[in-house]
Amino acid sequence: MNVFALKMLVGDRLKYLGLVIGIAFASLLITQQASIFYGYSHRIGAWIRDTSQADLWVMDEQTEYTEDRKPLTDTTLQRVRSIDGVAWAVPMWKGYLRIRLADGTRVQARLVGIDDATLLGAPPQMVEGSLADLHRDRSVLIDVDSLADLRLRHGLPGEGPRAVKVGDHIDVNDHEAIVVGSFRRTAEFFWDPVLYTTYSRALTMAPPERRQLTFVLVKVKEGVAMADVQRAITAATGHAALTGAEFEATSEKYVLAKTGILVNFGITIVLGFVIGVLVAGQLLYNFVVENLRYYAAMKAMGATNGTLVRMVLIQVAVAAGLGFGIGLGGAAISGVAMAHGGLAFEMDWRIPLLGAAAILVVCVIAALISITRVFRLEPAVVFKG
Amino acid sequence: MRTPTPTPPALPTQFAVQCRDLTKSFGTGANRVQALRGVDLEVATGELLMLVGPSGCGKTTLLSVLAGTLDSDGGTCRVFGEDVQGMRDGERTRWRARSIGFVFQAYNLIPTLSAAENVAIPCVLQGMPRRAAIERGKQALADVGLADRVDARPAQLSGGQQQRIAIARALVHEPRLVVCDEPTAALDHDNGKRVMDLLRNVAARADRALVVVTHDSRIFPFADRIAHMDDGRIVRIVDDPAASTAH
Image 1 (cartoon, rainbow over the protein chains, first blue to last red):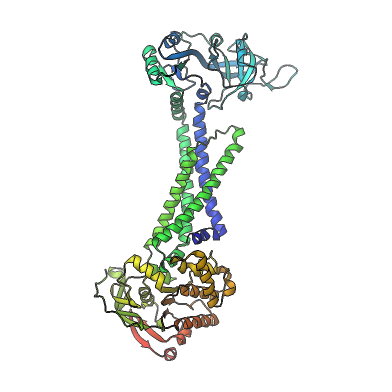
Image 2 (spheres, rainbow over the protein chains, first blue to last red):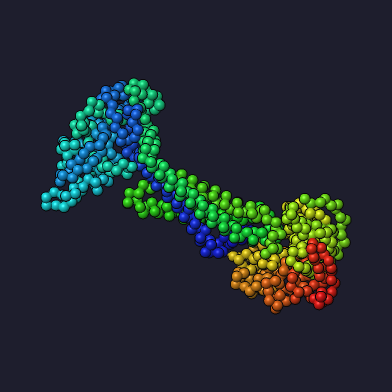
């Protein structure tokens, strides 16, 4: 009866299309919204992932996220370096500063100061110039993905508005700097432009403070347990020593909770899920109920409940599978299409799996609810027309 | 709750159906309706018996009990010697698939399947491979004069043709008892006559019997006997359909 079940499903093309499109729409809602939420969440830790040379990040234990500056004493670096199991440790400065472009345009940007000698903690991909150019006097690197913000809005005399380029002079917190190169980074949750320079130059540009060190980046010696080194650092400095993944998780948790993104997006996802589930469930339920009289007739003619359930489940599996595939494809296409607009769309492998499971469960439940009506039917009901 | 009834002795083979003291009620309390009040009925092999009577007299209930689609509350019902009411659910389902052919008033043809596929359903339900069942279905359609419409869908056919498909479906698996519920109710005179001619020929086999529930007095002459029901009882059996028509 399996082939007949499929013919019952696809025979009425209009109803079949309606069913598949309904399930596809539900799947699109579920997977697209979940992917956007995942994308935004994942962007929170993008800068940490971009700074992948370090095993551990040493920071004030009250630091909540990547942009939360709670500086450490300068001696922290030496204490960390003295711990057994530490292969190397380098300082990093990070904070918000005012940038003044050559035409007077003012922009807020994040400045990252990396170790002068090793340049460890540098951005992942240079576009123009080289990392070694940071050794030149007053040098900074600019972020090519933020050129829309790093824009001379008025332009210099004789030229129109334009983006900052290599060779331009800019003021960083009233300290003159020269753009010597540009880099590309992974899209982040935080939107301000990022500039890189050396640690010592960052300290001269930053407002004077008693404590200036933002992070210590640590590489753990091979064969040494990470957890042991983390405990030793915390014991010696009183500061937190987090792996990249731990720092990322802490940042995500804080940002999602503090910004209301979790609640707002959570509501959107739940609504998308509920609407999707209701649409798919209702369509499938209607489909089965519309065919009840035929199931009842087959039951009278000797079809067992098992045969009827198998028929319905085959119909559900095909409609749900096809609808989910179309919906998932639609979500993926929408993600690609909107990527240039900065949409934080990222479809983690778990999203299709969970989405498929949700759609399948909903469809099966809807089908079983409706098929129970067949179970309860006395086959004699078919004689009543 | 069904009243326990002693198993009756085996019936002579000339009886296709033998019912004794069948009772059936629906609902409880003030809403209780006694649909069958001790029905005794026999149908011989090769016979076409019509059940007639006013709406609500119990015709369809009796037909449902005979076909094994409804439990009676009491009494016994044997169809070709088998105690229908004594069977368990699964056993009765398999028995229906094997032994009963159904013709419904509303045809109940699946609109998305072709005529041959609709007719093949009883064979597939008995485990026959789909292709073989469809071939058997085509043959059954040829037997009812629809050899040229095997691929047509029900919506492409007239009411009379649809009912002939339903008859082919009822006969394709060679059942011994065919039950028909108002087979001509939705048909005009010509189509009704054609359908009854078909059913009349079907009943002409010695190893088979037909029970037809109907309100349609035009088809009374096709019956071998007519059982008149009223208020849950068989009040009169007419051996001469012509006389019944006159009545």
